[in-house]
Amino acid sequence: MTRSLSDLLASRRMCRDFSPEPISSDILDPVLAAAFAGPRAGNTHGIHLVVLEDAECARYWDVTLPEERRSGFRWPGLLRAPVLAVVVVDVEAYVRRYGESDKVGSGLGSSAEAWAVPYWFVDAGSAAMAVLLAAEAAGLGALWFALFDHEAAVAEEFGVPAGFRAVGTLALGRRAPGPSEASRSATRGRPDPLEFLHRGGWA
Ligand SMILES: Cc1cc2nc3c(=O)[nH]c(=O)nc-3n(C[C@H](O)[C@H](O)[C@H](O)COP(=O)(O)O)c2cc1C
Image (cartoon, rainbow, N blue to C red; front, side, top):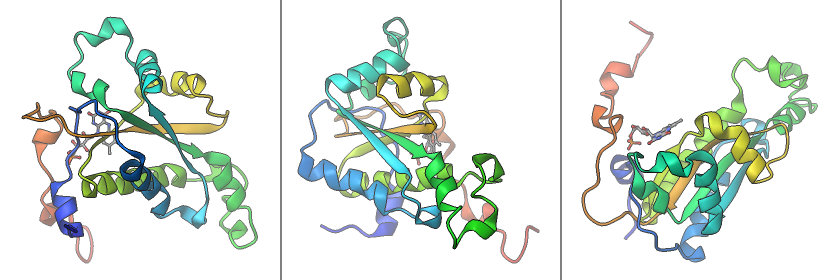
């Protein structure tokens, strides 16, 4: 059954409790490919996914959640996700792109520091959202979560080149059966659009 976009948007919620069963590539690959169908500033080709499975996921958790901190971890089912995809952005690709003739007038081709809004992070969010929606459409659970202060350690463990930024990680897999604990953030509910839409101006 094909689901409408509004249905996918309404039902998509982060999953923090996964079944460990692997995801076949015929299901997984199109979900991952969605990352490259999102909008990109200047159509820069600067978004990468470092896709981890099996023992590679274990290495990710060893780096970001050492054994001694695991017993108190609130989301043990997250550690069972069969796939982790780290979203990595190539900052210099954006700077180079905006130094090309059709963009050089923006002044953004000189350095990353010239960017008031770093579009590589914007595009990483768009890529993540595309994957989250593709996962929902494919019947998978997904979580987009932060690296916090583990960015450098993850980059080193998985050989991310210098100058690239690891923005966050997508966990993907089948949702564990049965109810799972809601996160404190999720229980805040979704905002009422009427409160946050400022038609015609802020007032
Ligand atoms: C940039 C970003 C970082 C996030 N980091 C985390 C995280 O580190 N851990 C986590 O459990 N959820 C994380 N979330 C998920 C949010 O808590 C979640 O999207 C929010 O509560 C709304 O719930 P929903 O996505 O299920 O609608 C993050 C979401 C975004 C967009």
